[in-house]
Image (cartoon, rainbow, N blue to C red; front, top):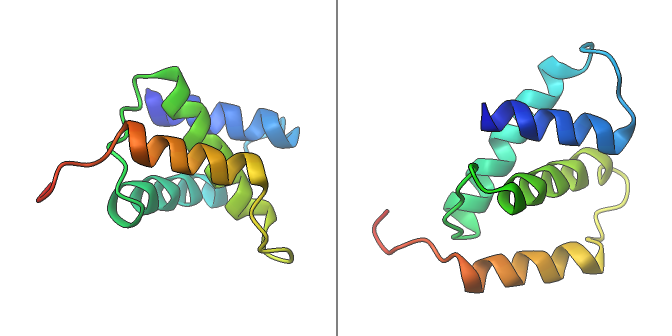
Length: 92
């Protein structure tokens, strides 16, 4: 259910009201979760609302940054805060 919540947040953020882009957005969400866990080293818990919104923000950034790869400052700060507050245990 948590991934569906992230999809709803992502669609709401971009004003998407149909399911036509779901086939593109779902792998984007999976990719964002994988990147945040395995590359950025964050122990995500998608049962927490703050984690869902962070994943939605990260996926949205990936969705809209194709032409402008500069990360917004609020997202940089959020990434930093999550890396400090929710570090993934070594070996996980």
